[in-house]
Amino acid sequence: MTQVYIVHGYTANADKNWFPWLDQELKKCGVNCERLNMPNSDNPSLEGWLNHLAEEVELSDQTIFVGHSLGCISILNFLAKQQKQIKIKGAVFVSGFYQPVETIPELSAFTNYYTTLPSLHSFPSYVVSALDDNIVHHKYSDELAVHLKADYIRLSQGGHFLDKEGITELPIVLELVKKLI
Image 1 (cartoon, rainbow, N blue to C red):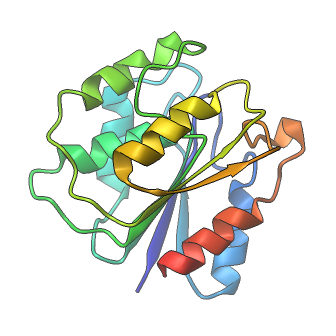
Image 2 (cartoon, rainbow, N blue to C red):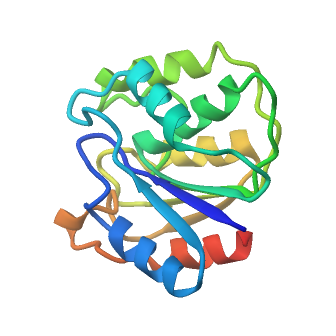
């Protein structure tokens, strides 16, 4: 059975933004979904986040990840670090990046680590960004989509898809997860 894991980003938690809404909508469809509360999100450590993912995630060919911002590169690091490459069902990356972001240099340990890892096996993926994102400029998501050979959805509005920007639901992500199922 399909298992969706939602991985939040920097300074967030599993109960913020559109994550509870997505969890609820997927469960209405009979999909197992788990919102992960990543440790110390105000001052995240690469090791702490990778260890938490290793403890909480059971990888299989039925696994789908939904990542937001720092959650995206954390998922990529976690997958690339696996001793044995496991084929997953897919992923949706929202406001994602895999290269250092000028506006948040404190997260560069996550992107620098990724460059040292073996290349990922390809898996179906989508990248979603907004032209008006002032935290992770859409160019970083553009580059992530090219890197992953992912389908790319660039919205004209949405900012960084945060609840403080009025985003508590994100129907496009639900649609994309349903496509992966």
